[in-house]
Image (cartoon, rainbow, N blue to C red; front, side, top):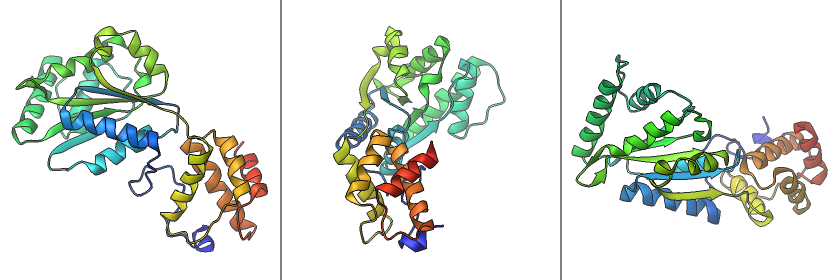
Length: 265
């Protein structure tokens, strides 16, 4: 609605992960590098945690876009609150195998065949499990750990990335066998004021902005409201651009941001 008014090519603050809008703050770049290390060196399990909206899924999507699709198969599994059998079936489906069986040995054999076939073709298999903190069954977490039993030539046939909110840290700390398998771990913190400001400018420039649209004074209430969390920054900035368009404002100032925040609450 407001793109023509602000002369933008596409919405700058959508919350759908995008490679072109992946902001590499120092910590997001480090999270990306750690996950890349895990995948390239087949290190087993990585755990990436952070509050809602900190960018865990965005980092993972950036990893998907970075990897050579001829050498890596990375799939993202959402809503993993399942029984072990449901989990195995969901993993198979995510890699394109639709099994009619409900037998765990049969399903594991099919998964093993998939992993061996990929390995024979020089393809590394990677599974990212989003919202892993919602897994309430210990047997499901045990099943995830058991996936690492698929090995060949002293290497794991599958690499696992567990994404979740902070409760995942406590959940894993109580499961020593799985905890000991985690070779890469990183916690995403909210951005500080400086990187919040850079984030806003980055998102605008990457959709064609040729001038500043937010006054310097407008950044402070954006930071105070969002706490430096990208999801919240996106929400308030998107609403502010809409309100600025409706008011025919030449720039988004602190008053417009205040109105956007009130609108969101």
